[in-house]
Length: 199
Image 1 (tube, helix red, strand yellow):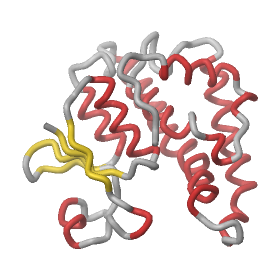
Image 2 (cartoon, rainbow, N blue to C red; image 1 turned 180 degrees about the vertical axis):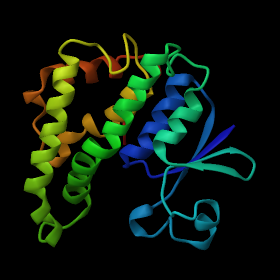
Image 3 (cartoon, rainbow, N blue to C red; image 1 turned 60 degrees about the horizontal axis):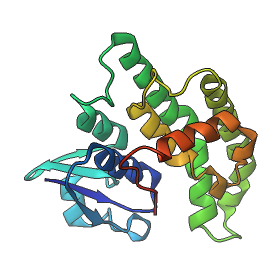
């Protein structure tokens, strides 16, 4: 059985939980309060020296960090990792997009809005984050206007990676109603058997 060390409010951790739920895998969830130093303890750093969640324990004493690497590991040999060569490359293309053009803006804006006080200096970053996050949502909108998913005609790990922070982008001040194809795609994922919402 897998063990996941994660924080339920984190989109990156939710990716892993959602993947396991969609696969019907049994797992144990170990809640870690990363906001208040839970990933900086000697015990946690012994498992992941980078001090971040999510962290997957896939065998006794063997750990895999980084949400998208965990998705890839879990999806091997399942329909969530496409068989066709170009479709696999497309999945990776969108996962790189998520890490470099999406998550740094939408997830960071959500973190500031959700976890930092209203007078925190980082609030000054929000206009830039909203501009760049809206650009990322626009890129997704254009793709989804002609495609049901990101790496072919069915859900893949690219969709799970992008769903995590997209579906809750409203918490960061993004207006998802401006992106109807994105909203329809969110609905498709949430309608899948085994879907589990973020806490």
